[in-house]
Image (tube, rainbow, N blue to C red; front, side):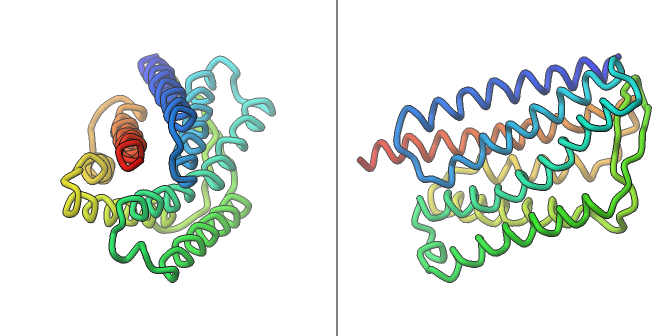
Length: 221
């Protein structure tokens, strides 16, 4: 029951961030790359909503279909955070971001990660799981760590560190470190949802960075 409530609360948090993120984009002209953040947040809202209502829907075709959308949103949306990171780097004129070759590298990397996740999603087998009051489908069959998530986090961390060194803005860097560190700590708690709070902090740090970009764009103008 606690996990159900937590996933619902996470959904509300993401919804609030989504609304403010879209408002920022509509309020002032911002780099195109900033639009990828609300796209990712939309996927997270859907993900947490389905997790929170899975126990009410129950095992079966409906939950299976809804869960497949979860997997596909994750595969298609999450890698675009690489482009978000590039947009931040380019906006603040980080030296390497001025070069065309890095724009190409970031674009190809995003497409490669999406392709990789598509293949993984197709090859893995959906399996029903029930733990701590949550009924959900998960994909099983893959080996090794979540490569896409690791690469995305690494790219965001590098840009976050570079942004801190040049602009003194450390929120993005701290957000990535919190997510990575929190995910690595083995919590002995009767919950699978608690650890996701680090993901909420992570996305919030990206939202604050988007806001920082937006208002710095206004100051430039």
